[in-house]
Image 1 (cartoon, rainbow, N blue to C red):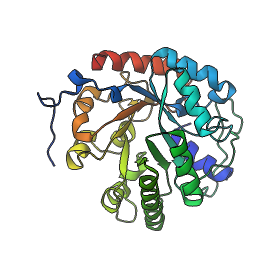
Image 2 (cartoon, rainbow, N blue to C red):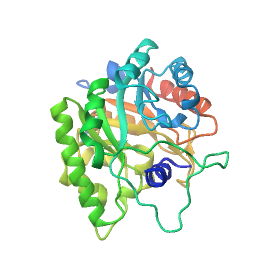
Image 3 (cartoon, rainbow, N blue to C red):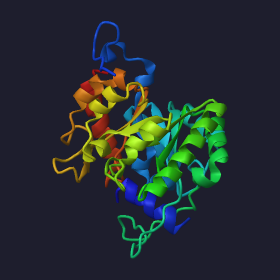
Length: 305
């Protein structure tokens, strides 16, 4: 099941010019510490809660250094408090950089069914907190855990009213994050690039907020956008990236390097984007460890790390 389908269903049922490589800023030559390989833990949603510590140690064993957390069946931060989770990650050589939360609850469309896992059984998770209803608590917990960014993973955008309401919540959260000393960003799927009542949601987010963006490069590509052009038009607005690959039909998610997205070209444009951290993600693959290992090996070779 795709990430956006999981978020929508589970949230309801259970609750400028481009500067490329040059002498002043060569992305590949400088390799600052902030360019360490990162992973979005939603990749392991189907299994991580069965063995949180063991799964995280396997991720560290592959070579990953940075983590972006997501939703957990255990609640909280994989069953831990923010400081406890951060401490465990640090002890095994991982750094907690970002955390995903829901913008507002989704309403289940008429006739829609409960989400199910690969075993055919309904996915059961605790009620998901949202920025609409629990903003200050979520901001405070992120700050307590020492993350650099709180990220809105998804929010309702089916109607213009939903988009306007979401923008209000996003702007309030951005201000609250600034007061707490952390960054705030919005993570896209492909729907944000499609017209809703004559408007493009992503364009509204860009023009009506000052928040940063976590660009999911594959979903943006599926939505018909060129990530590099987005960087040119909005320099410095994209400190976070999600990195996954897609087949030629833009239907199947694949490990990075096994699909059709030209990641060499995109990473060459990292300075224009203002990229600080990138997180490999594969939405609920059959073999998460094999997928993240393949992506890690490909990007390590591509980036010359």
